[in-house]
Length: 333
Image (cartoon, helix red, strand yellow):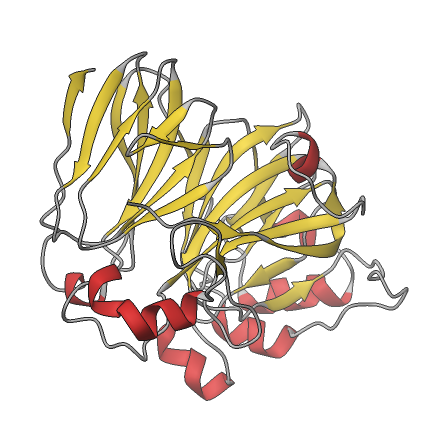
C-alpha cells in the first residue's frame, strides 16, 4: 500500500511551463508555473490524499488519525510531516537567497531549512549559484548588493540532468534559468532574499528583500561547493545524507525488482524520475511521488529501464538511530 497526493501549483515570476510539458500534467494554463508542491503539511498548504480509502483526506488529518500506522508507533500525532517535496520550474533565475541555520532561526522569526536539489532537466546554458567565490568577506558582499554587483561574488556552476547538491541552512544559493529541479527539503517555508537581480514580481513591484537577516545567516566560509553528477548505471547510489533525511538514487534494469522496505520499517518516500515505475504493482507516473507507510512492506519494479529517488531517515525516532530499512534486496521478476 502506498499513499499518493494531489499537487498544489504555484505561480512564480521565474516560472515556466515544464511542469506541464516535461511531466505531462494537466495543470492550470499559466506560463509562470514555478512550483508544484507535491507533499506538504503546513497550516497554509496541506496535501490531499489522491488514492486508497483515505482519498480526499488532508495529510494533516491522516497523521492525526493514523500517525502510528503511517510514521511508526513513536510518532507524535500532532507533529507535522517532516519534509516538503516540490518541483521547481526555473525558466528564469531565482532570487539570491539563504535559509536560516537552526541556531538563528527562532530569534529571526523563521524556520531552518536544509534542502536537496536534483536536476531532472537542464538547458545548455543552465547553472546553479551555490556558495561564494573565494575570499568574499561579509563587508565586500554587502557592498556588492548596494552596487548591484553581487553576481560577481557568487560561485556559479553549470548544471545538467542528473546533478544533485545538498543546500544546507546558511548556504547562499540561487537556481539559474533553464533548470527543472526536484527539491526535497525540511518542512519549512522560510527564505531570506539577499538580491533579486533588480527585477519586479508578478504584481509589477519589486519583491521584498531581507538583506540584514540574510547577512546574519550566510556562511561566509562556504567557498565554491560543487554538485555531484549521479550515475546512470544500474544500481544504487546515495546522493544526500544529512541528519534530516537520506536520498538514494536507484537505476532499475528492465524486469528488476527491488524489495525497498519490510513491514514495520520507517516510512519512505518514492520519487519517480522516469516512466514505467511500479510501486507494489501500482503505476507511478514520471514526476509523481508516493509515501510507503510504516506498517507495510514496499517493492519497486519496472518493465523498462527507469530511475527513482528514495528518501528515508526522516522519522523522529531515526534522528538518533540507524534506519532498519537501509538495505535493498534486488532480483529479477
